Length: 322
Image (cartoon, rainbow, N blue to C red; front, side, top):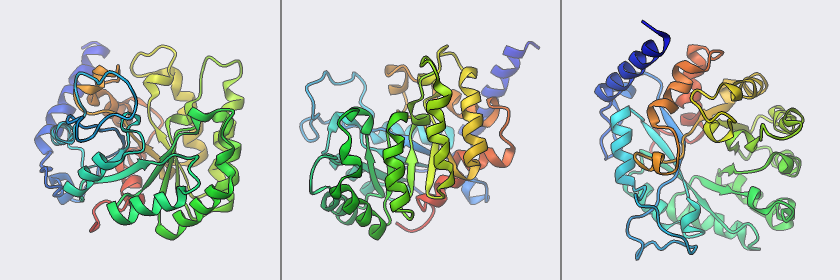
């Protein structure tokens, strides 16, 4: 059997067994894998948006995607592939209006945790964090300095110091969509507020086409000395120059991140559910799972369990009463 046929066969087997083992109901009850004491699978980076744009309008003037990434679509895919839990990250389409994510976590409180978006330039940013966490049970917020390059002084502002103090009080998790060049400013806040967990998206958006990506990537690796920092092994398809699974040109960067942070501080995430993956030119979930389960060669079996869910379940307290 050729190597390609072997890989296809293995992935077909994984897909079949995952579907057979998955018994996660839309109510959010534990799956059969969880009941058997196996490590959970947690997608830490999932965007959803509403089909009803009258009730939940888009914040920007843009053409709605043909297929909405509804929570129903997400539940179907999770059931099919045996995904136990997801962290819902507010999509930019709905802007600062986090109500759809709030509805999702209210309907399925055991299955989902929510991260909203707050205008980072709002002087009341700390109060907004408290509102969404206390009133709507959000686990934290996502901030996107990457959209404010050259205008990101808010990262270390007085308002954001108050924000981080409030986050420590509330037990918030911060999710950062950030460019590597902005990491030194973020490090200032991480050092000041060592009890606030910070999760860095997408390998800090390292660009392999840059003249010296290794130097830029070192800005991320230096954060490994802070025990409250975590990194997502996510969007390798978007960072890769080849854009071909399994994105081998990204492996040296994943390896350096793994060596620096360890599997206890790495986690897996994908982005979009079901048919919206192809709609946004993302890999299918089967390939996203295979990256961690079998493709990347330097992860041990225990590492794979931690990255696929054990670390995230502990951080976001999945499996505990919401």
